[in-house]
Image (cartoon, rainbow, N blue to C red; front, side, top):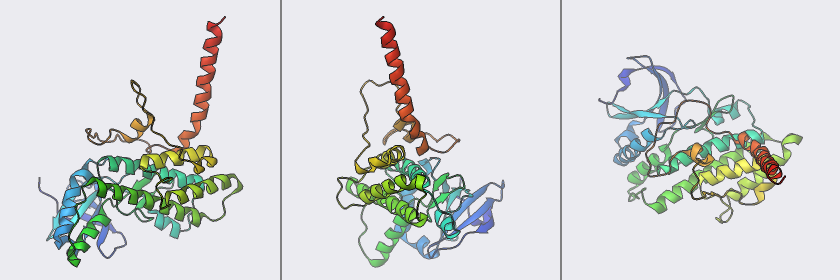
Length: 319
């Protein structure tokens, strides 16, 4: 099957352009199915390093299926101009919503960060970094369903700029380079959440402790020393979840991945993130939002119930 061209689409609504690409809401002529197209500039499309970087990531992007990632459907080309095909998404970006006056509570911001972390962990498991997480690459519905868009765009642009400047290109597949890219994703996310928290203004009394705890956590995430920074998106997500339970936990590294040998039951982490790097990836099933941070609030209750059941059984046995 050949790649489609722009002639295969009816353009419904062009989104605000950037200097390097234009995003369009469109429908396929053949069947009317909606898609979001990103049409790259002629200059970028002609750049050999941009083409190489996009082609390198394309296979992984097609594998990257997660409820908080804008799904990639493929690529196309028209008269030498490249474009990327994504599933349609009606959610506006956080930047648009902020400009329209929407403000988010500390718990809302934790929920946004929780979902982005979930998406990042899935991508990082594949060896794929985002490259530029900002308020305009995170889409968010009215009900706080988050969708992370524009995976790889910034990295492809940097590859093109290195080529234009005559700099030697650096392979992005080595462990050291990938680690730097993953750390950059986490730092970008921390800065975005910090921006949302600052824009929120004075928190309500009921939200004050969570707001202070979140600010403290984000400050630690942006420290130059790695001692307190989360090393993975999974750990960052764990810290956000613990913070929602108890704002005081922002002072300490609270997430530890404890996989006990011989454990038959799947862990919450496995259910949330799917198989680790190197295992076959299955498409994410359609359904509700990917993991909500608010669910962590029931864990203390479940632990208390389990303890009560054990004590009751012991009392019966000792009679």
